[in-house]
Length: 216
Image 1 (cartoon, rainbow, N blue to C red):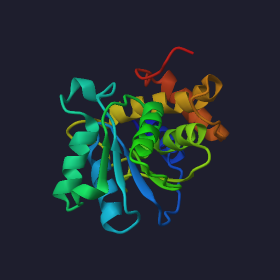
Image 2: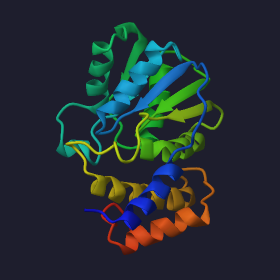
Image 3: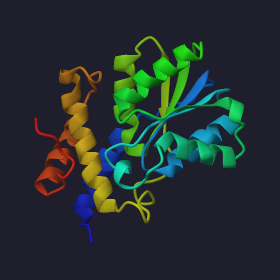
């Protein structure tokens, strides 16, 4: 049972990871692969609601999914979209990438191959990956207009049979550390970090939520 203090600290990180963009009609919905099938559903819902005429799924097998699935994330996600009523001709699949940087690089190559030049993107990811996705996309594709969104779900409701709340907190802590460190490595643009959020990160690390940290 997680303490009230841990839950309060985790909520601070959860809220920070959201960029709270207001969606606009776009040229393309780019769904970044992961273990969370609700991300695919969110992308399909946006397409079916008319937010963009093109739906791209990007993802091979990443750090988590290579232990869970034998089928690439993008292929699994596309099947969900088709089942929800998205037409085949509206979908493109990139199924080789293993991280967010590769999601963007390989999607660039796919669009070039298809001779498509979308300028405005809606990027869909997990709730606690919104900010990292934004920072990575803007680093590697700065000239494009971008909005980021995720499944509309609270921290309390996010855990399911595949991922516990405790594991979500471990991952959020790791993602926050990457937001801090990756700009120096050239992987992302820098993001402002409020002192309260920084403090919450440090306290969660002290409490032992460190399994997804990388060496500095």
